[in-house]
Image (tube, rainbow, N blue to C red; front, top):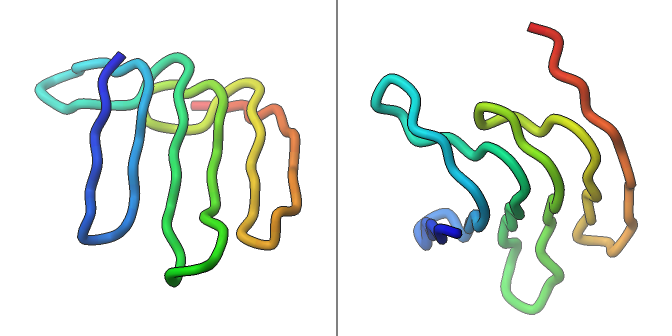
Length: 76
C-alpha cells in the first residue's frame, strides 16, 4: 500500500498503484479524498481503479454526506 498526499489542493490518495511508461497511476482498490473548506465534510471515492480512472465497484460520498454506490465501466 502506498500513500500519496497533495496538501496544496487538499487531496489524498491511498491504495494500490501501477507504473506505466514512467507514470504512476491508481490501479486496483483504493481511496481518493478531496478536501473542502475547513469544517466541512470532504468528498471521497472508495473502490476499484484501472489505470488512474474509477473502474468497477465503488462508493462516492459527497460533501453533503449523500452516498452513491456505483459500478464504473471504462470502455476504451
